[in-house]
Image (tube, rainbow, N blue to C red; front, side):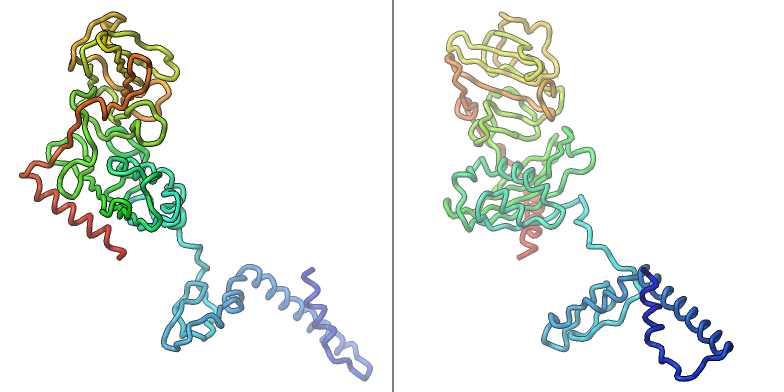
Length: 376
């Protein structure tokens, strides 16, 4: 195939009208050989560096801005040239498309709700980040659910701003969570006519960071006389639309679990493949049942018929059975087996940042607000 171009050179040579001598014939043949070699070399060098000629041939001259003062970089990544001019071939190696942002944050996105929240968040994420949309939406919903249920309360045109970091290698926090970490968010709700916000901050001496409103109160409600006292976050609710039958508390393996009322152990470690180490406690007076799943340790003393007192330590949380991360599953049922919402059965409260710590929180909130507003 590479002989096609040299043969064309022979066809274009002018023909002599006189007879050829042997010397002239040798010179002619030498010229043909040199022409073939030069054309072949040009062809093969051209195959090795096709981008040089392509950068000139594909320069979008017609699409250049009208103003001659505006400059635009050539497509091969070289120095800018005046708009409308054809750049000279560059000797630089053609650059690949820019990689997606590094996996460390925090990053800011702003989205207008035009449909499902996940689709709105996905459209706001940059190239290479689409896989984060589902996980990030789940985390955002978890923070908003204390004030609104997005699937029911969102309106087209609502705006959300999120500052987040992808989970670092090995996960984040004591539970090694693989989810994105939301540092702060704001949601402008048309239905409620207000902005809901959440700021991640760890008070001095606290074991975990938590999410706080602008006024210094906790985003999450807390159960009074609940089964667990120290945990990182509530990751699932009965009312969050996921059809989950209990409340999940993200907490490291070995966190103490307490009886929420006086009762009797009804059964333990049933259906282990799904529930792992588990325990049921029933209130004989009302028939109400508390179910604890995915435990790490159930003491041998917790046998069927054993009486327990409210506030007594009865087990330790874990990650056993069908569980993807350390947590405690806490489920309440009435005597008929109907699932109850613990946040409607228990009294609830919200934590508040002590007055002495408010200046530190306010400074962090101001810093996060500035990051959230950076793109405006």
